[in-house]
Image (cartoon, rainbow, N blue to C red; front, top):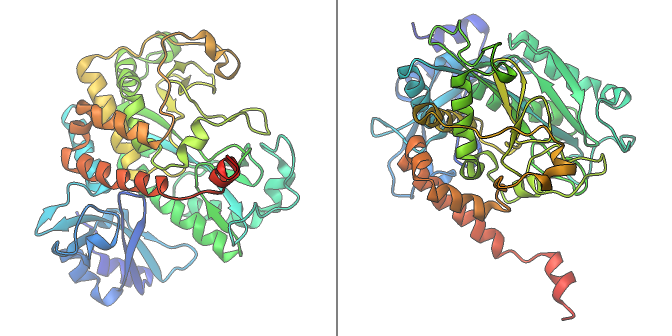
Length: 435
């Protein structure tokens, strides 16, 4: 039974709803709708001009309507007269195929049709920086190895505890918070869930973290590599697949190597098979490739992959299997679109299941110190253009995610790359002025 948002507003004291959708570049777009008008909006959606956001549309396109999915509604814990609700994009009565949440919902249905229910958890790292974005916000956070620094995390207690309190209030099952490997960097963890629910929570989490940081006079960034020499922002994703009832983990087999079943290995095989092309989705910005191809950081390790390899409980590879019944994809970064992250994982994994893909041999070595010993393992793309080309050549993955989405995404991302290439930098002047 669909939740009546008007009744929800009356019961919770909601004055306004933020009807929100995420565009192709992870921009969070919303209209602030008074509760008195929400009944009509729940039926017909809030109107937008799609061209004004990062969607492949023109000014001549008809209105885009964002129809709220009432099951996703969240009352803002820090502003209780406002509620956020994720929306599905419609145009002329049809779902917009390129819209990220629609892309994910299509793939969730495909998984369900195959008797599979994909569950995931994300680790969305972020920096707390000064309001002008120039530097980290804590002048005393200077340790060479700052990971898990208890003094540093307590100096940001007001921000971190407020966000965690809200996640607990929302029933997300928040269970730990820590200072991460870079100065000024943090990670907050909550329980895994169905892929669509995780994507909605991930989207809201980014909104919440930025909002609470601003409330405290700071700024939060999920940018993949905001500071040279410091570890970048990853968004590691833990993946398991269950039966449609959600009771049996079909990845779990304690008799198998690493506790990963044959189906789990095939799903992983799909991830490995498409790794270089799915990087265009999981690492979607020019800056992303400053993280996965970074030199050693001040802490001693980047904690990000640059080669398509997998392993057991070893954090130097693209995929690790930390325990029975799940694996961790360490490739995605903080810029990843919450909905497209889940979508591309499902698309690649389902292809692996259908083709009974073999993930290849695992490697137990330290890839940072001994990676040169691994022969024939593909390197991840060196830049966004290489990733886009790999994605464009991967017809199977493009079709699995959706041809209309793929065409739109590649078009806009190539425009972004061309804009980057036309931008003059100080490096060019420093390197070329006196030639």
